[in-house]
Structure formats: C-alpha cells, structure tokens
Length: 468
Ligand SMILES: *[C@@H]1O[C@H](CO)[C@@H](O)[C@H](O)[C@H]1NC(C)=O
Ligand SMILES: *[C@@H]1O[C@H](CO)[C@@H](O)[C@H](O)[C@H]1NC(C)=O
Ligand SMILES: *[C@@H]1O[C@H](CO)[C@@H](O)[C@H](O)[C@H]1NC(C)=O
Ligand SMILES: *[C@@H]1O[C@H](CO)[C@@H](O)[C@H](O)[C@H]1NC(C)=O
Ligand SMILES: *[C@@H]1O[C@H](CO)[C@@H](O)[C@H](O)[C@H]1NC(C)=O
Ligand SMILES: *[C@@H]1O[C@H](CO)[C@@H](O)[C@H](O)[C@H]1NC(C)=O
Ligand SMILES: *[C@@H]1O[C@H](CO)[C@@H](O)[C@H](O)[C@H]1NC(C)=O
Image 1 (cartoon, rainbow, N blue to C red):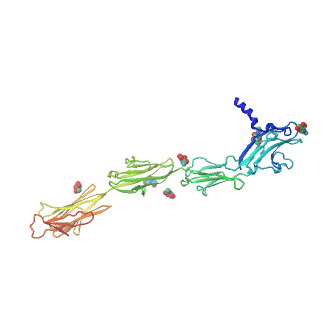
Image 2: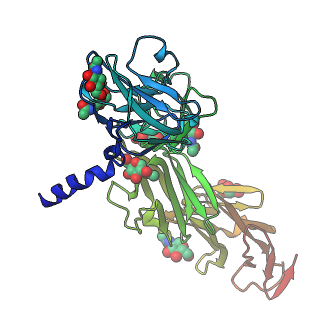
Image 3: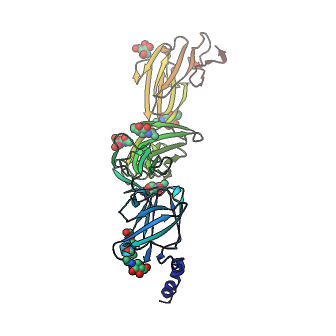
C-alpha cells in the first residue's frame, strides 16, 4: 500500500509539464514526454487532459507537430479543411472523453519531432497544452517471428506463421514473402503470413526466410529459420571397413560376405535419419551379437572363427520407424595342400605304391589325382589303380594305390585340390626302376615335390637322385 501511495505521489512528476499549464495554457495534458518507435512499427501514447471550464458544443482535439510553421497531424475536427493535411500515421483518441491518446502507426523517420495537444469547445478559443511530446522514429531493426505450429516431420503438413512484433494494422499492411529450398510449387499458402509446409527429409537443415517489407521502399526486415525436420531412417546400409577404416565397401541387403578365418572384420551400419537412429547388430537368430555390440553401428570381429558363420543383422531403431539389413557371413579358410607323398607297399607282391594327398579349405575342397595324362576322379578301383576319397570336415584326404603294373614307364603323379575360391596342385615324378639293378623289393622309388600351385619335379631313383 505504501509503495502504491509513493507511486501515485510520484506520478505527476512523470507526466512532467502537465502541472505547468500557464494561464495562457489552461489545458492540463497528462502524457509521456517522449516516445521511441521503430519505422513501420506502432506505439500508443496514453494521454488525458483536463479541459477548462465553460464552453458549449462538441469538444475537438488536435495534435500538432511544432515547427515553422506548426503542422496539424491528427484531429477529430471534421469541419472546414483542418483535417485534410493530417498525417495518416497519427490517430487521436476521443477528446470528448478527455482522451488525447495518440496512436502512431507505421511512422516514417521524418515524423520524429515535438508534438503538442490543443482542444477547443464550441466557439471558445483554442486551448493548447504546454506539454511537449518528443517522438523519435528509429530505423527498423525488429526481426519478424516465425512460429512453427508443431515440430516439423517429414511428410506431415505444418503451419508456419510469420509476424512482425510491434507492427499493427497500418493503412497499408506490410508484405510478407518466404524463400527457402524447402518451398516448391506444391507449397500451400494460406495468406502471405501463413505457410503450410510438408517437409521432406532432404529439407532438414535448409534455411527458410520470412521477409516483411513495409510499403516504403528499402524498409524491410527478415528472419531465417534452419529447418529441423524429423524423419525415419532411410538408406540403411552396411559396409565393410578395411584397413584404417578408410575403405568402405557397401553390401547389398541379404548378400553373402566371404571372410577368411582368422581375419579381423569390421562392419559398419549407417542410416540417415533425424534424430539419429539407434543402431545395433544382431547375430544369428536375433540375439544381440556377442562379438562386441556397439551403438556407433560398427561391429568388430577381431578374429573371425567358423562359429561366426551365419546371419548378421543391423537394426536401425527410430520413433518414426525402424529398418534392418542383414548379410550372411561365410567364413572361409585358405586352401592348404599336403602331399602328394608315396611310399612302397611293403606287403604288396607286385611292388605297388601307396600315395596320399590331403587338402584343407573352407569351403571344403575336392581332390583329384592325375596320373600322366589320365585324370582320376572320385573313388575308383581296378586291378592296378585304387583311389579312395575321404572328405571330412575341412579336410579332403585321398589315397591312391598304384599297382606295380601301372608303373611301366616314368609318370607324373599330381594331386589337384580346388574349391570355389582357389586351386592348387603338386606333383611328383615316378620313375621305373632301372632294369638290371638289384631290386630291393621295390620296383619304384619316388621323389616328392611340395609346392603351392606349381609343379616342380624331383625324383629319387633307387640309390641316386635325378633332377629333371
Ligand atoms: C469561454 O471560456 C471562458 C473561460 O475560459 C468562459 O468564461 C466562457 O463562458 C466561455 N464561453 C463560451 C461561449 O462558452
Ligand atoms: C483513450 O483512447 C484510446 C484509443 O481510443 C483507448 O485505447 C484508451 O483506453 C482510452 N483511454 C481512456 C482513459 O479511456
Ligand atoms: C530437432 O528436433 C528434435 C525433435 O524435435 C530435437 O530433439 C532436436 O534437438 C532438434 N535439433 C535441433 C538442432 O534443434
Ligand atoms: C537415399 O535414398 C534416396 C532414394 O533411394 C536417394 O534419392 C538419396 O540420394 C539417398 N541419400 C543418400 C544420402 O544416399
Ligand atoms: C532387407 O531384407 C529384409 C528381408 O528381406 C527386409 O525385411 C528388409 O526390409 C530389407 N531392408 C531394407 C533396408 O531393404
Ligand atoms: C585301371 O585304371 C587306370 C586308370 O583309369 C587305367 O590306366 C588302367 O588301364 C586300368 N587297369 C585295368 C586293368 O583296367
Ligand atoms: C586328413 O589328413 C590330415 C593331414 O594329413 C589329417 O590331419 C586328418 O586327420 C586327415 N583326416 C582324416 C579324416 O583322415
């Protein structure tokens, strides 16, 4: 209460000048001493006056801009020609109710100056207040506001409203225009201030500008909004990271990825969405991948094992929709070839040889023998040649029994292994024992050459070595 009382006591000081009406100025005007308004905006200057006693007839009030000469800017005096030259930006309250409130709408810079209020009643002379109102019209700096009805979501229409705070209905409404990459021929405009926008994912992060232009050339203001469009994951891709993460090879959904056993593997899963989707990898039937799951979308298998063979699925979870992409990891192992090697068959009467050859790979290799020009495939047996194949797991083992009669002349014996990825072969040369030499119970001896893919020949001849 005390504070209120204090304020009421101070109030007259605020309305400076109102108490100073002289005898000549019998009008007591209560209004602020100065007001600042931006060009094109508007302001209401509250004002009351206490009229001198006496006089009959309608009360007329007028605001003048002081100068040489003084200029009438607003009046309710409709007679004569007084109102013809008033300023369209100045509007007067109701002087009949002792109200000299002045509304200034869309002023121009030239409207800056000092103003005073006068009144007259009936035929009595005009009474002017001594009170001076200073109006300062500044440059327009106020930026418009852009209101977004709801958060922008791809594919959903949203209403955007642009308005200039502080602007009021002037004589000529300001023009509002929009520019931005998100606007396209289909955009619906309610009126220039309202824009109905149905954003697309690619509109996220683009700029949208609302520009308010006042009727005076060169007077305009604008605001630019960076669109935040939420959208579900799109273009979910998985890729293979090699080396220092520099190389990325995209993999199609459902594709098969061959990896060598023991290799280190890094799979990347990436999705385009806003806000970012939650990425996770699952291995096998949907259980989260035991090999180090990550929410960055990178799956690391430091040492690929055969048990890793199977389906890997990347899930991108997002409030607006989820996606998944899977790939089949097929674990392979390089082809190793052991053999061929042969040894004499001790108990064999005809001096035969027993040769063996093994290959290991994943996918499992197929083995075959080549004796001279002749290809020996599969398990077979006849009197002189016997081939047995024993595939087991990653191994393909084969043995070849050569009867003495099959070895009447020098022959190359090769073992060939192949799978879908690679092929290798190794060979050795079988030489008949030189005639006349004492048979050490064996007709043939052999040399073995181990080589990867190439055929080198080294033959051991009973008792000495022969290079070919
Ligand atoms: C004019 O105003 C004066 C006081 O200022 C008053 O005495 C007089 O009666 C008024 N005349 C008319 C015609 O209203
Ligand atoms: C004076 O007139 C203005 C504009 O017409 C109005 O907004 C204001 O409320 C009035 N003031 C009083 C004290 O009646
Ligand atoms: C975009 O909108 C989303 C959801 O409304 C919000 O989580 C995110 O912080 C916003 N991003 C920016 C840059 O404003
Ligand atoms: C996402 O997919 C769409 C349609 O397939 C395509 O137009 C767009 O360029 C893709 N974006 C990226 C970043 O790959
Ligand atoms: C990938 O394939 C699966 C199964 O066919 C399917 O459910 C999924 O939607 C596909 N993902 C993408 C991104 O196409
Ligand atoms: C046994 O098979 C080998 C290889 O096919 C062939 O060279 C040989 O003549 C055959 N021997 C007999 C007795 O059929
Ligand atoms: C095949 O040969 C390899 C190498 O000699 C051996 O380790 C493996 O046990 C053999 N497999 C079978 C089923 O004999």
